[in-house]
Amino acid sequence: MARSAQIDVAVRFSETDLMGVAHHAAWVTWLEMGRLALIDGSGLPYTEIARTHHLSVVSVSLRIRRPLVFGDTARITTVLDKVGSRKVCFVYELHHRDSGVLVGTGATEHVCVDLEGRSSRLPDRVVAALHHEPAPSR
Amino acid sequence: MARSAQIDVAVRFSETDLMGVAHHAAWVTWLEMGRLALIDGSGLPYTEIARTHHLSVVSVSLRIRRPLVFGDTARITTVLDKVGSRKVCFVYELHHRDSGVLVGTGATEHVCVDLEGRSSRLPDRVVAALHHEPAPSR
Amino acid sequence: MARSAQIDVAVRFSETDLMGVAHHAAWVTWLEMGRLALIDGSGLPYTEIARTHHLSVVSVSLRIRRPLVFGDTARITTVLDKVGSRKVCFVYELHHRDSGVLVGTGATEHVCVDLEGRSSRLPDRVVAALHHEPAPSR
Amino acid sequence: MARSAQIDVAVRFSETDLMGVAHHAAWVTWLEMGRLALIDGSGLPYTEIARTHHLSVVSVSLRIRRPLVFGDTARITTVLDKVGSRKVCFVYELHHRDSGVLVGTGATEHVCVDLEGRSSRLPDRVVAALHHEPAPSR
Image (cartoon, rainbow over all chains, first blue to last red; front, side):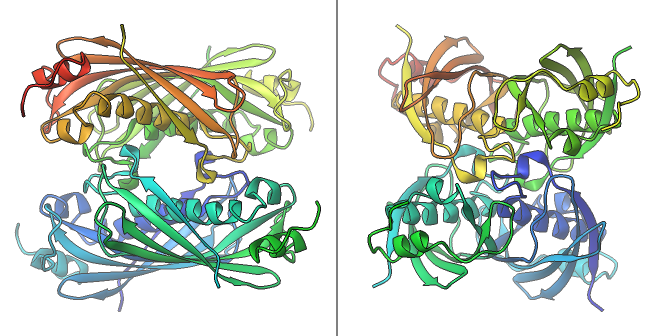
């Protein structure tokens, strides 16, 4: 069964725009918060991964079904979609926390890179953690 | 022939992240700058449209082929992809200005809303401007 | 005794820059979160105030004693410093939540404006709420 | 005579907030753009400095006299205020480009740090460049 994580993110005043709603670029940062929560929940926090590698974003897609305003809280569910040898994919659902209404969906693809930005295989400890098996000692 | 616009955007220091590259959410704001330049080039500036309507983002997709770093400038080409009665779509290509390398592509879909956020037909003057016909007096 | 509020804010990945630390503009948005938490705690949420008025920022000062990195959480203490007839001032202390170390301080000044941006007296219900007296019916 | 630099920055749609004006945190990033333009104008671009050092922000102050809206362009004048052995200070004036009206002022202080974030003396080549003497070969 796919791993998932859920977080709540309140719309910040600074994330609104002159239309009076949360700007779509803020939604993109919320997806990032969702997947980092999923990774942290794997037992291998991203701060650990980041000592040697990064999961560089190669694609983002976001669909906004209903805007969110200041005062709203988004409930973001992130699901680990695929783990390849060099790539990881996540999908997302965003609900308005208080009403339960689905307000958006998203997907991101990531390639593993080393600290110089060169493409790399996913470290075994990352794959193991994402699969929720006990991480090898590091 | 499809209308298009080209702008150059230098990566801001504040747009970088700890990986040392421009954060992908910054790329999303660059797409916005690209389409607003296209709209402004239509003879009907977005500030005029915004007196009565907005083009609310309902979907964004972005593919990053190569990261950009502080010191780089992105050349963003925006093409008007479709104009419906209530919807507008744009597609984007991003090149590294100095090398000419294609670094990313994107697409966005927008629905027309009034200032209360209700779905609306695109005003005739907006459709006319996007089609580059003389805008009706406003 | 001055009213105060405390919130914890985890550094977001998207808030870091190529130096590997939280960008100072992110700190400025954290001050905003701190004061909005204080206002919300007054019993008159900012979303209510914002129906008729805003507390427009006229000055910000921020001193960073120690940088914060991704993985850190800031504990932000906001104190209501002054309430005038047209002006409100807040001061802030930021601590590294886990170590307790003081990492920064700040201050902001705000003038009351109506929804057209014109200078305005602070509504009585706002003054009352900030002073923690029972808010008049609204 | 103090070194200075002038740049124009158009308010981005994504920088506005629900008050309909540019958010004050955006102003803070504009100050950064102003000082980086000044540094780049010294003949020693910040991208060069950043190979070995950073000018870490230790204080920011900003005064907003008049808000800016989407469609406005800020003209930012940055003046090199002080160069010490470990510290650099800049002051800023922001004008509404089209009307010439002074809309804000600012000041920032920076300490020199190495790439591990440790306090450092300003490299001679940085001091030389800021003083506009010919930079030593690097």
